[in-house]
Length: 262
Image (cartoon, rainbow, N blue to C red; front, side):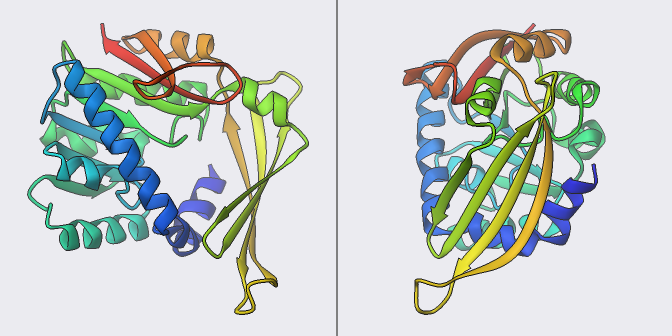
């Protein structure tokens, strides 16, 4: 998809600023702690984790600090460079490796590091970026580099959220950055276009300066559709949360779906 290159490669430097903000890094650290607690309760302590769409390492690096062995893969060289720098500063290079690669070619990129005990798709990444058949292929490749007892965790936003917010403007303020999103669904409710505007506050803290406008196109899933997709790839849905290990899933928002290797 052309928008993937536009967003994560040509405009990557802009998004690195957002992902590296204090608020976003703190969110990653909090998520890593919750994931660690959840995996420990399932007997997966200090295991090997694959983080697909790892970005600047805001989940992978905290997990590495908690004792997990983590392999992160991302399509953006800027994201990978930033993640490597952060891992070096945090002193966790022995526990985390970041690889440049396309998730559509997952098996060939990470084959030397397999098998994995857990695979993560965090913060609505990769799954939905292309189309149904591509998502199926990616999850089958994850299955190929996993084994009995492995888990797959997909953290996304469910279809109901997009339906409920279609036509609205969703505003997220992160430090000096302001991101405005608007959603437009197709008639079949299978895909959504996300109109994304990125602003930064001027020195006076009041004036907003437009940096860029980007249009994303996503394949969206309800929990039943995601379960069917993953099942075809060899994964069985076992639990679903709105906050991993804590809040049971409620339609219309964040969906963290946990699947077991079948």
